Structure formats: C-alpha cells, structure tokens
Amino acid sequence: MSSKEKPTLGGQRIKTRKRNIAAPLDPAAFADAVVQIYLDNAGDLELIAKSIESSDLNFNRYGDTFFEVVFTGGRTQPGTTKPDEGERHPYSILDCEAKRELILPSVIYIQKILRRRPFLIKNLENVMRRFLQSLEFLEENERIKLAIFTALAFSQKLSGLPPETVFQPLLKDNLVGKGLVLTFITDFFKEYLIDNSLDDLISILKRGKMEDNLLDFFPSGKRSAEAFSEHFTKAGMASLVEYNDKKIFEVKVKEMKSALTTQISEEADLSEVIETVKQHVKDAKLPELEVVRILWDVLMDAVQWSGKNQQQNVNLALRQVKTWAKLLNTFCTSGKLELELLYKVQVQCYEDTKLMKLFPEMVRSLYEQDVLAEDTILHWIRKGTNPKGRQSFVKALEPFVKWLEEAEEEE
Image (cartoon, rainbow, N blue to C red):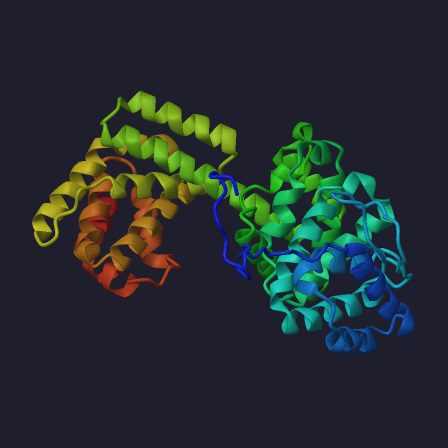
C-alpha cells in the first residue's frame, strides 16, 4: 500500500448529497389532456368544469397553458398568440361567434374554476396581458371577442381580476398609434355599459388608474377634447362625453383657482390678476356665472380667518372686499352676474357659522364699492330664490334696505 493512500474500513458507506430532481416540464401533455376533456364533453362547459375538477392535472405548474387552451383551443407559441403544435378543440372563446350570449358561459365557467383554484387568477392575468399586448396579431373579430369577454369579466366581477391588468398592457405606443387600442376600448365600454351604469365604468377606470387619462387611449395626433367628444358621441356614449367634459371643466376651474390664489396671496398687481382671469376664461371657455363664483371663492379662501374674534373676521372680510372690489367689478358686468355674486355671499355666510353675522356688512360693503347695484339688492330682497338662511338674512338686512328705499324715494 502506498504511503499516500489512506486505509478504509471494509463495508464503509459513502454518503452522497441528496439532490432535488425536478420532474421534466411537459406543457404539451397538459394541454393535450385539457383539450381531450373539451372533446370528450363536446364543449359542454358544465361537464368540462366537473371533469377538470376531478382530474389530477397539475394546474400549479401549467396555469398559463390552461388559459391558452380556454382562449384559443390549444397551446400557443411562447410569448405569442400563434397556435403551437398539439391537439386543439373548437370550443374556445376566440373560436365562437362575437356574441355576448355565446361568450358569457365561458366567463361563468372560468369563474367556477377560479373559485376552486383562486391561485389561477395570476395565470389568467398573464394570458390576458399577452393577448392585449398582441392585438395587432389578432383578427378584427378576435379583438371584438376579447373586448366582449373583458367587459363580461368585469360585469360578472370575475374573481380578483384587477382593472390594471386590462388597461396598462394596452398602452403600448405602437398599438395606440395604430388606433387598435381605441377600437378595443370602445368595444369594451359599449359592451360593459349594456349591463352597468356609467358610475360603475368610472369605478373600474379609477381602480385601473385611467380615470384622468382617457386620452391616452387615443393616437397622439387625436388627443383633444374635441376628438374625444366626436368619437364617443358617434359610438353612442354621450354620457361618457358629458362626464369627460365635466372632468375637463373641473380641471380648468382648479387651475384657475390655483393661479389666482397664488397671485392674491402675494398681493399681485390688480391688472395682472385681471389678465390672468381673462386668459383662463378664454382658454377654458368658462361661463360668466362660473367666473363670478370662482372669484368670490378665491377671495374668501385667501382670508386668514380668526377662530373666535367676530369683529376681527368682519374687518378681514371687509378689507378683502375693498382691496379687490375692482376685480369683482371687472367681471360683474350685469344684474344677473351681480345677483349670482349675492347668492354666493348668501350661501357662504349660511354654511360657515363664523360668517353668519357678516352678511349685512358684506352686502353693504359690496354696494359701497359699486360691485352690487341698488336694484340687484332690492331684487334679491323681493324675489330671491335661494332659501339658505334667507329669512334671517332678509331680516338682518332690513335697516340697510330701508335706507336704500328712502334714498330712492328722495331721488
């Protein structure tokens, strides 16, 4: 025996490290088995669901493959929507007619599968995301079927399917640019609104973080309020157009308020503030009544009100009115607009307890600064239609009104 060789005891066991030997992946066999279940049951989804439930198929590993079979009738090539080798069945979602009554059973069928195997929702998301990102490779009627399925899936509240699964994959530049996304989303909206309200649709858009970004579905050259209105009006969705117009209006109002608040808090030059208002009115096409409401809101919001000192609040309010009277004068150019301003004062004093007793003081100040005309005040007293605090405010204003009427008689 060589001196370098170490002696061993007879019968010694040599320990070997255990290895995790993975079973070979075989999605083709899984797909063929699912296809065979479809064929054996002649496309009867009730029977198919029962057969799948009693099978020992490995859904944990082959969830994506399962939904490929559901949507296309067989396996698809990795990362595509193209058919792969293997068995196929003719009862898939994309093989049926583009009719909701024919696609709805598949939605209900998937719902049953997901209730027993909720982990499969991630696989459904994966497959839907892939199809949505491949709209250009689908036939037109296949895109319609996918839109109908998606709408019905949300209508049926398909277990845990998040809206972002649908909306975010669509926002690929090439798909948007070709108009495919707009066509798909229009079909989706129309189908969804058959069974659901506009509020339900808006709720889905909010959860999908698309409520304020609907123009992102349009090709870049058509992202305008006019294009939105024209497209969805033509598609028969006037309520969606009205909603979007309202959203745009709210954004414009918010922008105007923000700009004015900054200028007023910084005590900017009056001419600069007036020019800012005019520019926003022009850009947003704001109606005159809305401009008056915005101006009053901004002016009063800029006041640093005292928590307890009523007299101090009176002084602050009157100072604000006096400082910006010319701004109000510039845009209160008719009796109708003056009356709207008076209603704004009335409502604010009614809804804000610390301002309740300021109403007569504010009205008198606006009169003295030539913002409100005598006729406007008397009209409000005699024919005012807003009931908020009206009775008490009319009484509080009696001494001033009596003075106005006596002055009118003297003239």
